Length: 155
Length: 148
Image (cartoon, rainbow over all chains, first blue to last red; front, side):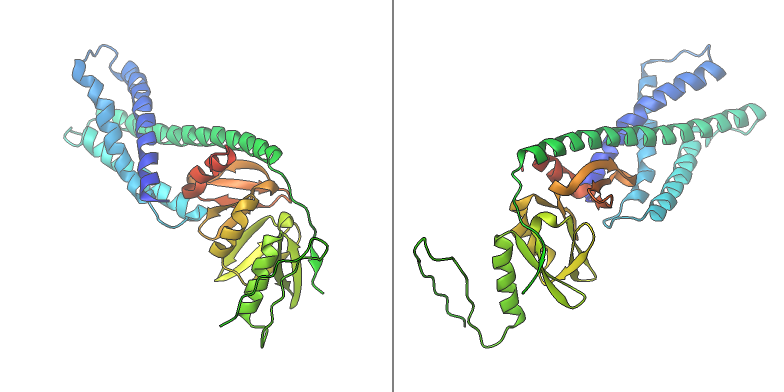
């Protein structure tokens, strides 16, 4: 993948992550701190977390086409880095307590869910793109004049 | 240096290209292959025998270990040309580059489906699947929409 395409995919992923962080914040907030109220600065939190979340994507950059195993291994590394980075950012300065641990586990699971959903959504977008390309392909084939001939052994 | 002569003939006479050479070298074979490719055919070898393959029968062209192969529904033939040379000849015949090492005959693709890591797979008429690199997807889209 070229670096330009890699940056393009990062941008798409960034906005998917922002949306999913909003949803997961809503879910976790409703469970753990339903009484909490925030100022306008709270709107920046998903943007900042998503910004941090795209950094581990760097492990996926490769000029060469990767094999399935290489992709899976790099995805695992990306997930571990992602969890460590966001956990450090979100809970780095808090003391460990029973409540905190429960919240941390929920946080880790939420990050994993967002990670998984990003891939599901990206794949769904690719499926949509592939369908469109297949339709365009069929139109292309209908519109292209075929030329004739057969394969023969040379004399 | 080979001399080149062009001679105009009457409509009644058959058109032909004749190469007069001291020996049939690789260079001469390349010229012959180029002429054939302009007529919708390519020369390829299989098990030591030479064959003429109709371009419309080729599913895709791929370079493997610096050797170029043409793949039809049931055979693969080795050709002397490089992929970039064939690309020049075949681009007007519905072939498109889909990776650094491969050209795809768009007339032989039945569908396109996503693969992992943003790549796509072209499903061919014989059921085989070939990888379309992300880098070449924009070109493919343009061509399919008639903008290429």
